[in-house]
Length: 227
Image 1: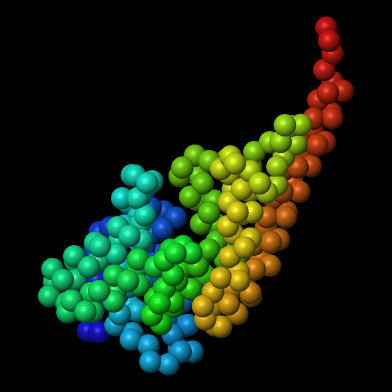
Image 2 (image 1 turned 90 degrees about the vertical axis):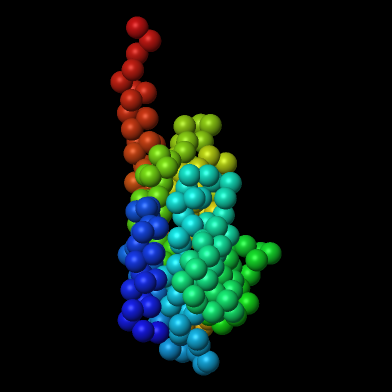
């Protein structure tokens, strides 16, 4: 890939990014992690991989404005239109489209090509460890969702089985289970290195929140009188 082509793709990506949890730095981390993974693979088409990584989240704005939309589906079509509109080969554009379309975890829409699997893994790596925790907290703040919800008895829920969106619910529903969903050995190994940081943060945060309610409610009950 020429520097001119890279700048063209990068400029288009930058014009589409409008989300602090899925910002340009997320895109660069995905790209750099993808290149790290690609070094352990054979026959990688780096041009397709770089293009797909740079453009994989260009549909985020549309999904944020209309949650019924899938950013992977929207982004794949935007990427295809952009590439063909700038005289990229249609077969090349189609391969990039498929990479982007399948980078979001869905049972019925899994990546098929090597480049698509690397993009998938690199993107999921950015949801692991301390980085995954930080990005999730940022996103929860953007959509005004709480850290946790309370159980009927007034204690803090750990998030398991919750229907109410919260950081704890997201951790139990998604972040805790993402570590066995990688296609490449390199990505799985990198995720394993990061896992404990996420576990420790969640456990500490839950203990601090739960103890505040447990101890504080008891103290408050003892101070309140009927008259």
